[in-house]
Length: 266
Image (cartoon, rainbow, N blue to C red; front, side, top):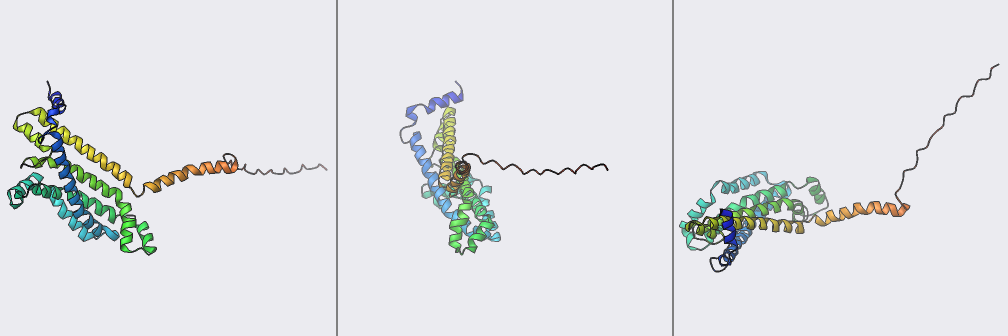
């Protein structure tokens, strides 16, 4: 049999889903790591991005913060995880894994949120400032709603990265779906390795889809777009009711040119 049929057989075997080493238990561990790391990353990155991006952005401070955060992308996550595990933090359970994943998730959150807030429509922001809005009102009622799509893009990117990278937690002895993969390597079971990889990929797609639905449900502009569509549909109906049907343009007035009178021969 091939690798993929064997992986399907492994996934459809009930014994592989139960127990402390089963898929359900590893899935709960993976979701726990993902949720904690994403929450901590948002608490660190988003307030800083909002502060730096408010009012058009603090160019020097914003560029400095983004460049420093992007250093985390240049450092291999596994190397950071190993260093934290063999250090003093290694005695505190999942803390090294959480720290490593947070460092990896902060850059997309910080960059997207900063760009979204700092590049909010300046005409709209200026009009709101002219209405007498305070700085806090300007941020919460104008800039954040305008930046919401870009902020959620950063959240979705960070969440998918955490789901994919959390498999490395199994290498120093952590939990998650990575334990399914490492167990397959240890026992020379290629089908189990492929099955674990498939589970991680499906979980990443599920998280992305769930956050996309959440973004759509929480989008501040959703109600306004719906009302605009209803208004556009109502206009032709209202015009038809008022005139008994479609209003036709009045025919253009025509002018007749008087022909010169024929000359009478003398």
